[in-house]
Image 1 (cartoon, helix red, strand yellow):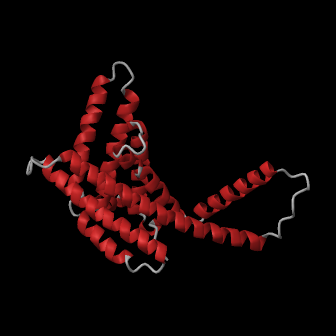
Image 2 (cartoon, rainbow, N blue to C red; image 1 turned 135 degrees about the vertical axis):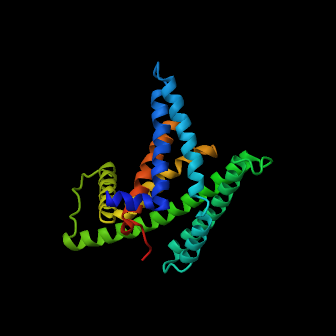
Image 3 (spheres, helix red, strand yellow; image 1 turned 90 degrees about the vertical axis):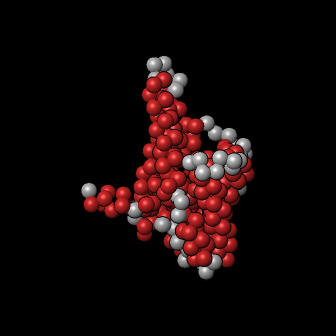
Amino acid sequence: MDAFTRFTNQTQGRDRLFRATQYTCMLLSYLLEPKAGKENVVMKLKKLESSVSTGRKWFRLGNVVHALQATQQSIHAPALVPRVCLTLANVNRVIYFVCDTVLWVRSVGLAAHINKEKWRTWAARHYCCALLLSLARDLYEISLEMERAARDRAQREQPPSRGPPGCSVADEETEWLQAFLLLLFRALKGHPPLLLDTVKNLCDILNPLDQLGIYRSNPGIIGLGGLVSSLAGMVLVAYPRLKLRTQ
């Protein structure tokens, strides 16, 4: 109970909880909509999803400042690739949160003349760019971890023997794929923060890709991805040591 209280006392913790509720409602409404006699339940789920989505905008009003601070910190990252990717990603997050604030102003009626669709497209575009840059950083970190795993494996094992003369190209490609997947598994298994960050970014990017028309998904896929991402975010809030950091 104390851990739950500490979690909900944090703004990010409450936002992740609300976000998980929002995407759970989206997923459930998608699953129940084709079923007969579930119209009232689906309508209530969609209303709850809309209410939670509106409420979450309050938690994001101060995120512009946090994104600016993250940008300043990422500039000093020691490695070049993470420094460039994180800095550009955080700049895009700053613009995204600015667009999100403008949309909130429009939703509460303070500026009804704002073009909602235009600002929503801008927000989705910059959010997508931020996630793509974050995934590029994840891929860079994964490649480093795979290199370490390969060196460790080479040190433990003797040099591999050459295959028989009759070994086909297809067999060699299969062995290469198996070795690659094994290295990837070992790299992610030995680095839980990297695994969490990669899964979270992959799940998050489904929504902006759908909004921009780049890769269409149904509400069920988006809801499932958002729920998985929210659960990963809740883990990161509850256990900050699992947050991916640049060495």
